[in-house]
Amino acid sequence: MGFGSPAELAGQDPDELFARLQRRHGAGVDRCNLYVYRCAVYFAEGGRDAGLLKWWSWKDAADPPLGMLSAVR
Image (cartoon, rainbow, N blue to C red):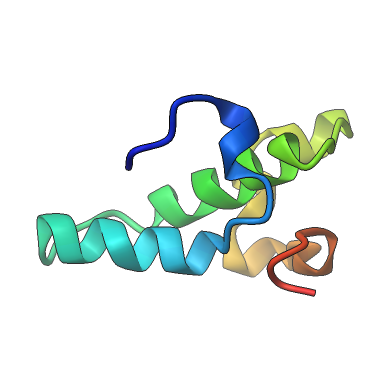
């Protein structure tokens, strides 16, 4: 995706990152990638809650705390 370090993910919108991935690879991109982007952005923005550093904590059905991500606020 063009990022050189995790810190560069701070302030990114995980939904836009997922949309870019879909445009790049076409149909069939697993939605789990979105959850990983949410988790990675959370970490890049200083999030350290152990429970939220698991990608599955950011699944849609898990009611993720998206308001914690700066680009989503």
